[in-house]
Image (cartoon, rainbow, N blue to C red; front, side, top):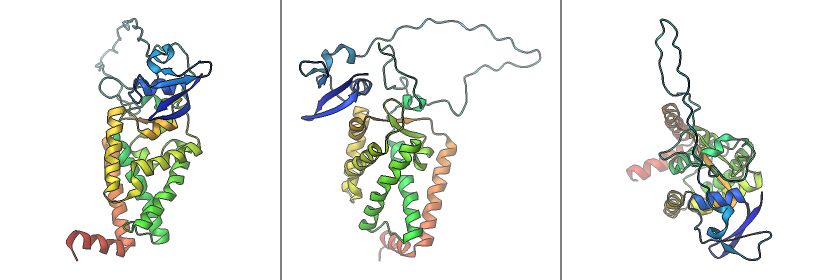
Length: 287
């Protein structure tokens, strides 16, 4: 598979696999006029002029009517779709895949089929990270008497979480919070992210997506990241790292489990750290 370089905001990016570049162009992450170059080309050209980067029309599929089912005598035949909990979630308009169907090149089957269910679900990503950070901070409170209401403590926890989160992603593609939200992070080819790339991605998220947790500033940065994700279909760090975030349908049981878990963690923090409880009480009801 050929590798490509592309221009973004006046800088040269890449190399990235051809499938990643196609994905960014199809999802609107890059405009068609983006200049691209690959080995063997004499000069940089707009992506819209490169034939192999253009989406291919989907070939119509022949419909084959299945044979009629033969119900067993005395047993009512219930017809319906598969209600398995493992059925993947597809948003309206069909699930977005990393490569358009009908592309001329063949690719090996993905080692992780979930990567094909890449969708835009910013709230699942947000709550997955909130659960992870809350769980991690509660562990630090128990071990080191951390007070997350102090910015220096909170910043230190975020710094440590960059590396722990990267380890989990490079080993399993998810963290406890992402598991609850049925969210996975893979490469564009459906493989686990290398640890180094996962660390770089987490640093970008912490800086560009969370502004190091600075009060008010972090809220602004999260709003900008939300806008970019919903409008362009991909965050800047996923585009630069060649990573893809996949989602599946979140059942009511997982939502309930998440709520209960957050309540338990909050109560645990209040019990183990009276200082935090006192500061939160003063903040809510005044001194």
